[in-house]
Length: 246
Image (cartoon, rainbow, N blue to C red; front, side):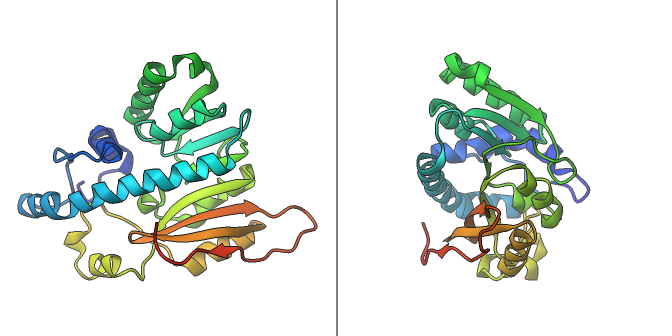
């Protein structure tokens, strides 16, 4: 991805290849923001690890869906990608709003829905949006997997999500993780122009909007948060921190 390329342009080119991660497949056609020699090394060293992590991320997200999603709920799938989770949400009877800032992602998601759950296609809505500048529609639950690494302003992102929903499941990269320290030290290794945010910042944003953390699970070079809006009259308190990774 060139220095001035917009994230949505990058994903319009690469979302099809990236989606193969959930199938635990190689996707060496992804175009990265790196010299050819570095891209070659990255594809043959880091990508196999990423594929395994994506498989685990899929499992953890499916656990969240099974735990919280019920028939008739409105669920927003932010950064819907190729539609893997949109389909799973539809299978559980949810009304799903698939959101992405890349048109190609929405087209792939729609195609997957119509192929795998055509009987539920009327329960899906596809929204081309930049959540850093536009508020989400009202919902019961928001999933935001793999979105914040490409967001520059977490406060703006959360500001357009938290007032609209009751439960958030979100992956965030941790600046204190060794891999992200290396990326900061050697910017050329940050081949996807990733962003990371302190846990203290995330916690302060949740508290500012009247939310509390239910669970924080270390995952890869970041953390997976499950958070909820605090009911009126309740105390804002920190929830569960799960030690260890997924």
